[in-house]
Amino acid sequence: MGNSNRHIMSIAPYLREIGRGKDGSRALGREQACDLMRQILNGDVSDVQLGGFALAMRIKGETAAELAGFMDAVLPLNLPMPAADRVVLLPSYNGARKLPNLTPLLAMLLAFKGVPVLVHGMSKDDNRVTSDEVFRQLDLLPCVDAAGLAARWMVGAPAFMTLAHLNPPLHMLLTLREQLGLRNPGHTLAKILPVLPGALRVVNHTHPEYGESLADYLDLDRASALLLRGTEGEPVADARRTPRMAVWLDGVRRPDLGCEAATGSLAHLPDLPAADASSTARYIEMVLAGRLPVPAPIARQVQLIVALRELMAVNSR
Image (cartoon, rainbow, N blue to C red; front, side, top):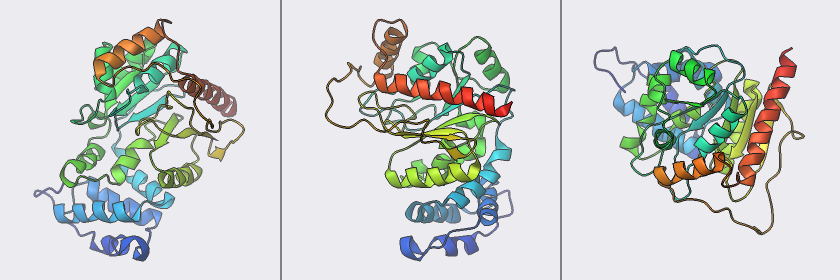
């Protein structure tokens, strides 16, 4: 992301704070984190410094204050969004590897209930099946601008937009993974991105430690959100077993509105398709047509999201 046409600035003071290893590193304050991320997204740092930042943060991990500061720098770069009421945001950045990617199924089920849904993510992944690929099999092409989103919601269909259109500088930060082979804070930021005011974010994590830091961030950000351990990193409940789903309403944790993880042995396994895009799309079509049942964990997730949106409407009056 370094740009030879720009004046290269130094983020060395920040790297000295975050780059001392897991036990010796120090967390940045929110304003420091914002300044650091603003320089990165502007392309005002060298490639060496950018790689150092990604590796240092991978080892240290992000605090809630750092995530908030990074997000302060990211938000002004979002594509302006059309006005919409309590849009549900499904960040789809991992794709399917062993299990089918059922994020598009979750999006379609919500849309059929009159919920405006925006799925955002990457278009292609050499090793996984993306939501974009599944949506294309369902004849739902990605939207490229705000007018396309508004048109999709007008006809009661979910919208998909790549991060490259939604926030190009953040997309460039995510592509750093292709060179380093490791995630960086950009991946976390994409998964918690508040694309437009008043949206309901479905946030997922893959490892418990990320779940803790994301929960702290949702507290700090005063968000309305559903947090769960996703299916291979996707924001959809595992079709085989209901995960714990925690709920935030205007930044307040609401244990009474969420659900605990299912325990014990599985009495029944759903008949899931192969993980390729075509098989997944055909399965989704059969579920939507009523020829196959909606997996119970996903039905429960839909129920929680719809109920939370209704409570958001009550609180906004």
